[in-house]
Length: 429
Ligand SMILES: NC(=O)c1ccc[n+]([C@@H]2O[C@H](COP(=O)([O-])OP(=O)(O)OC[C@H]3O[C@@H](n4cnc5c(N)ncnc54)[C@H](O)[C@@H]3O)[C@@H](O)[C@H]2O)c1
Image (cartoon, rainbow, N blue to C red; front, side):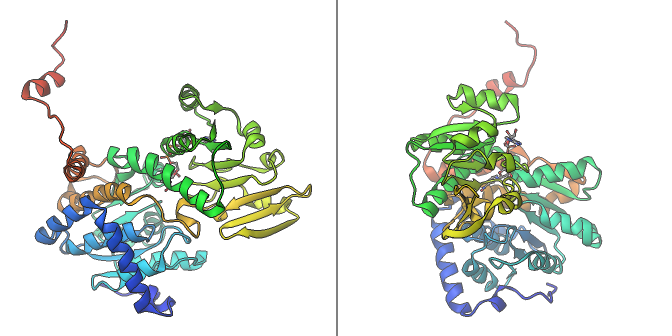
C-alpha cells in the first residue's frame, strides 16, 4: 500500500501502547454485542472477498466502526481511515486500528480544519479502490482534488442521510463519476440507526453531559424525519412534553397525529427547556429565536453538520461566554439569560466529551449492511453505472436474517402460491 507524508495517529500520542490496549478493549466489548459482524467475520476470513482491494474510509472512528474496519481488513483489504468529524474520534481506538498490519488510521480527535482535510488526503494517498464515507467528505475530496483516482475506484458506500442528499445533488448535476451505494437508505439502517440509535444516544448523551432530567421539561425537536421521530418518542418516554417543528406539512401532521405539539420555531423557542435539531438543514435556530429563549435553555444538534444552530449570531449577541460544564458552553445575553450550547453544536451523540455514539446493537446492523455492500462492490462493482444506487434488497434481507438468527427469532416465509399472487395483477374479486 502507498504511504502518506501525513503521519498516522501514533505520531500524535504520548503512550501509544497504552492507547492501543484501551482501544482494543473497547473494540472487544463492542464486538461481543455485534452478532452480525461476528458472523460476517467467519465468512470474510474464510472467503477473502476483498482480496486486492484498498478501502479508503472517512467515518466516526470509535469502537463499533473499528470492528467494521477490522472486518474489511480480515476480508483481505488494505484499509486507510480517518475521521468524518473532528470531535468524534476516540484516539485509543484509532491507535488500536493503526496497530493492525493491514490498517492505517489517521484519525485524531480535535484536529483543526487543515489537519482534518490533510488526513483525508493522506487516506487518498493510499489510492483506494473502494470508498466508505459518512457525510461524503471523502468523495467530495476525490472529485474536487484527486480526479485521477476515479479511474481505478470500483465504487463507494455512504452511511448517512446528509451524505446521500449531497450525493444525489451531485448525481443530478452529472458530477458523480463512480457508483455509490446509499447505505443510509436501507431499511436495516434507517429504521433502526436513525430512529432508535439517534433517539437513544442523543438523549442519553445530553443527560450525561448536563446531569439534568427530561421529566416535565419542554423538549423541542426540530425536524420530524427518521431521527426526529426517534428523539420525540424517546423523550416522551422519559416524561418530557415534546414539541415538534417541521417544514414539511405531512411530517408536521404526522407529529400532530402522534400527539405532539407542533408549532413554528419562533413560538417553540420561547417554550423550550431543550432544543435538539435533527433536520440536516442549515439555520434552524437563528438570531430571532435567541430573543425568545428562557434562561438556562439547552441547545443541541443531532444533524450531521454544525450548521443547524447559528453560533456566529449567538456569539455576537453574547456579553460573555464560558464553559459551564465539560461539553457545555454558556452564552450570556445582555439581559442576563444564559443559553447553553452542547458539544459546539456538532452532532451531540458523537461529539460531546462523554459521547459514545449509537448503541452497539444498532451499529451492528448498519455496519453489517456496509460490509455486504462493500463485498458487492468488490464482486460486481463493474455492473453499476456511476451514480447513487440503492443497496440490493437481498443484501439488506441477508443482514436481517443474520440478526434474527442471533436473537433466536423465527419468522414466516412466503409460500410459492403467495409469492405468485403478490406478483400478479390478474387476481380480482
Ligand atoms: N446523530 C446521529 O448519529 C445521526 C444518525 C443518522 C442521521 N443523522 C443526521 O441527522 C440528520 C437528519 O437525518 P434523518 O434521517 O432524520 O433525515 P430526514 O430527511 O428523515 O428528516 C429531516 C427532517 O427535517 C425536516 N426539516 C428540514 N428543514 C427543516 C427546518 N428548517 N425546520 C424544521 N424541520 C426541517 C425535513 O422536512 C425532514 O422531515 C441528517 O443530517 C443525518 O445525516 C445523524
